[in-house]
Image 1 (cartoon, rainbow, N blue to C red):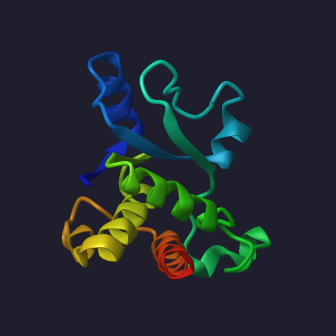
Image 2: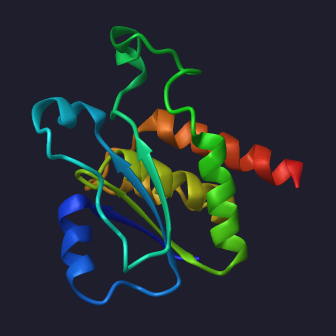
Length: 152
């Protein structure tokens, strides 16, 4: 399984051409931007990709959760659903694209968790200067993947 990281701008360009076959997408988008731009919505993959998991979640570090009225447990509650989605894609032989607004934090944390869980190679995402993996997203997805594997 190949795991790739894309920004919104990069993925919208890719969607204009030939989108990779045998691919599932995990698409993170920002609830905060909707307060600024009422026309903002997630990337539309219809007609290009059938397997898409959309996650509307702010890009927050652990120190800012309290300011938003959140805790580690109440932030990003769909990790278990994403783990199931990832395992279904993996078992079906699909590649995975992780995409967020800038392709640096939430998508990078997700990709790192997937790579670490399946291949023990997630560290390369943390070591690549282009990315700033969201550590909560990483830990929650990694833990959910480990728990899902242990439950099957």
